[in-house]
Amino acid sequence: TAIRTARRRIPVEARRDIQAEYDVPAGRVRKDLSTRETPEGIRLIGHFRGIGLRNIRARQTAKGVTYAIFRGQRDLEAGAFISPMANRNEHVVHRVGAKRVMTQGRYKGKRRQPLQVQYGPTVSQMLRKGRRPERLADFARGVLGDEMTRLLNYYLGGRPLSSIPGASA
Image 1 (cartoon, rainbow, N blue to C red):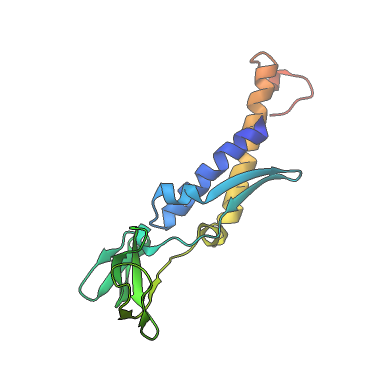
Image 2 (image 1 turned 180 degrees about the vertical axis):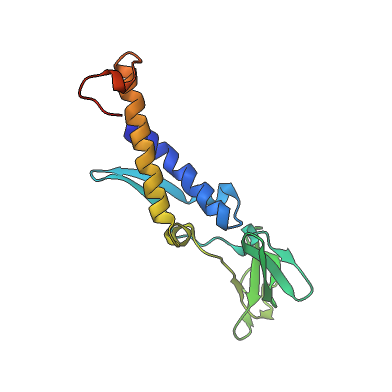
């Protein structure tokens, strides 16, 4: 059960650690985080799926679109705009390449440049950045130690470990 407790708590701590640096909604980070029990222990997995700039507090301006990947720091994507795509989801896009005949949407049959959706970093990249892996490993070790101590106390009828001969806490 100590492993299950750690497996449940590690994604929450990873999300909090990511949100301390990145300005991404909790639901969007949680969607791409999962844990798996392996013979070696617990594996935290960040899926490699780009987060659209629309999910990173994007705002349309006269010069393009501003967005905030990192907390307190806005960047400008010049020439970009926010547009509903064929599935009605809004994305930050650029027009790129040579004009071609559009095959779907409101410009079907007209000659337009294709749209290219703009993405930010993935949760996988956020997990690997800096000292985050070491911080999460330290957190997991702490959770496992605390949980094992709690379970031992529970099985010993609530007595602290220091009262048991040969046990150290």
